[in-house]
Image (tube, rainbow, N blue to C red; front, side):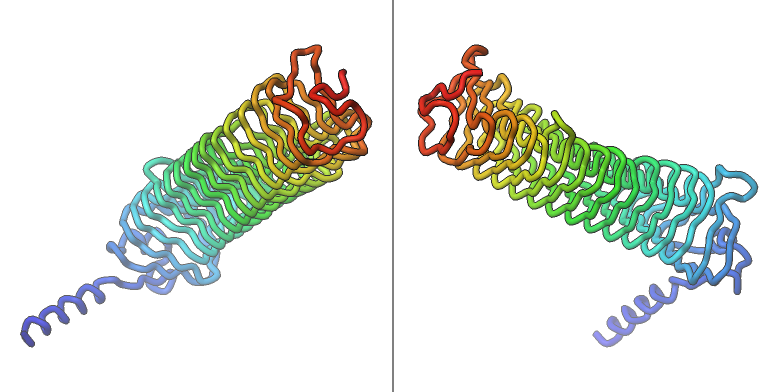
Length: 403
């Protein structure tokens, strides 16, 4: 038994010893020279200096460690790539990248980029297409980009605790399923978060001063929770899909809709929307979709509160305080339920029903020009008496103020 254990110990030691550390420039003049000499599992340590290279990695599981090392991808033209990763399991840590078209190109699975800084990429600081799955982008600073800060096409991407500034298009653009975008900050980007695939998780990000849409997700089974979006020239959140969750987010100071949804069978809850939109714009817009549960949405200081364009949705404990046309507007749709909701301060209607079989129970609609309106001329109907509803103008039957 002792002989067997000794042999195993020798073999284990040999395995550990086989992973070498290669040093640039002490042992190799260039990063590419070290890569060419490296074996699977080796570590390449690059010391302080500026390296004008277009590095290509074909060996798997290499670990790059920068010690105040800068990679300039220009190399005589603006279309270079700093590091192109063609092998799985490669890790890159602690480098500064500048110039070039794409600073890191990830074309293999299971690669990670951590604690790097990216400046002045003409297109993408970090780019990856299929089969580049399960990429991990953690703790980086992306300070300027001619296009997206991070573009990934593979599934399972994990983007966490990065800082994105001055990206001309998206901060993060992902088309692979199962992406996680968590605790990043985005300042002055076009689309800070843009995901076009299912099972996306977008949590606890901070977005401010953006150009179009703060968080965009098009895919089923999304989870968008605890994000803060403020000061944008467009919508705070825009979501499409089936069976998702939108919870605990805040929106402030956006010129378009605070929330725009085309979703079904989803949970939307516990959100605050403040000072968004323009006259005629809407803070919370459910453009289409059915069987959604909308709970605890608070709208303040917005021109219009809630616009409902889908059927068979339930709104519970939602409130709107604004100055525009409508607190709640139900379009030509059927069987929506509003329980213990409220609206005040609107120059039009607190609750404007244009749908059929609209159920309105509990809640308060007072202090509006018309507290409750029902477009009977357009065929609108309430599902029954307005049980427990508080309002001041209009009548107390199923046909309050007729427009």
